Length: 165
Image (tube, rainbow, N blue to C red; front, side, top):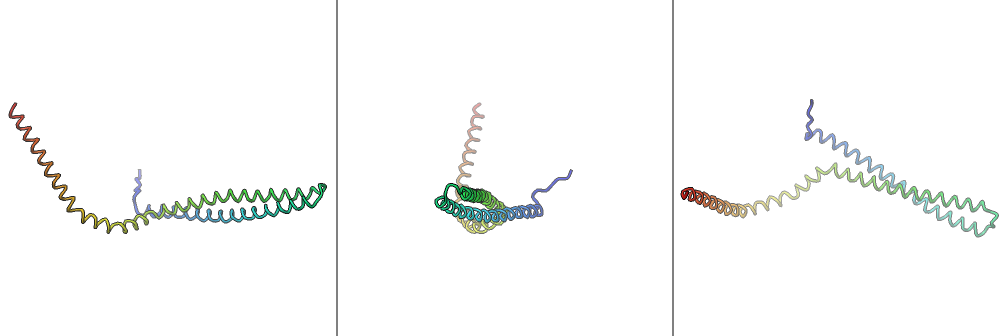
């Protein structure tokens, strides 16, 4: 049976390339979906307003016999409302895909971000360690002395009890 090495640089590069490709695809599809949805929403909104105004004007200016104009206006209004609804639905999907693509791209670049962060913090951490080292060493020396003293006292008491028995 062949054992796989999970922590190889070659395997990391292959998997990272796949993750970046998926992230780019999600971003592109999400942005295209958002653009289309904005267009549909705009057209539906503007068309519904125009259809409503035209339908209302034709209803006011015409007699009840001319129901054909009313039906045309109503179908125009509802057709544009469907464009508005589909555009709104596609906006939700496009926004979700764009966010998912952004998160995947962030994950793909996490190693570089961590390296950058470490480079920024390392000089400060080294300086802090150099300044704290003497203080920590003194404290550890004091703790060690007290610990050794306690162990000696325990051994001495154990020897005294042994001698008394």
